[in-house]
Image 1 (cartoon, rainbow, N blue to C red):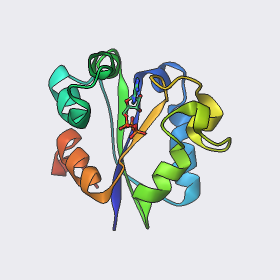
Image 2 (cartoon, rainbow, N blue to C red; image 1 turned 60 degrees about the vertical axis):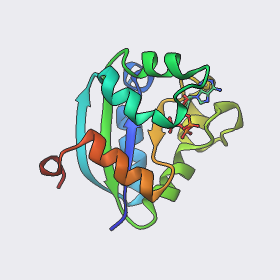
Image 3 (cartoon, rainbow, N blue to C red; image 1 turned 90 degrees about the vertical axis):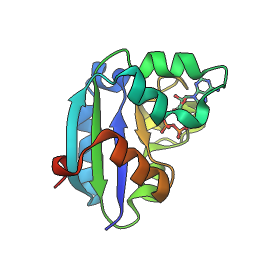
Image 4 (cartoon, rainbow, N blue to C red; image 1 turned 135 degrees about the vertical axis):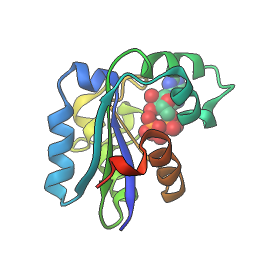
Length: 137
Ligand code: ATP
């Protein structure tokens, strides 16, 4: 079964949107196979956002994701990567459709509530980065 790494970012936790995000994935029919709350280290943030290293917004991006608790999750099901991205909505909330998580709860690119893996390959990489195998059902 396909898996994706989904993370509620610090602003989503602070705004008490964790239940809302989980509810949407459960309602859609996906299965929760991993979940934990943590304040990400600089190291894990640097690797997670490695593709953006060198870009002007990179320091802010890492500073933000390490600024507070996040909820890291692994969800499983048919086409979860693509469907999860569709449920989350476009990266820039100004372009995210109403009905998506970002389209319903965000207006700011740097505060877009939730992360979702953008391919099956990055899902595997991210799941291995954030979880050890014994933390997954
Ligand atoms: P995420 O990886 O968080 O799911 P994404 O895959 O939709 O988002 P990416 O292009 O991978 O988008 O960017 C990662 C994150 O970096 C975005 O969610 C956003 O918060 C931030 N970001 C992207 N581009 C910019 C930018 N130009 N200025 C500020 N922040 C940005």
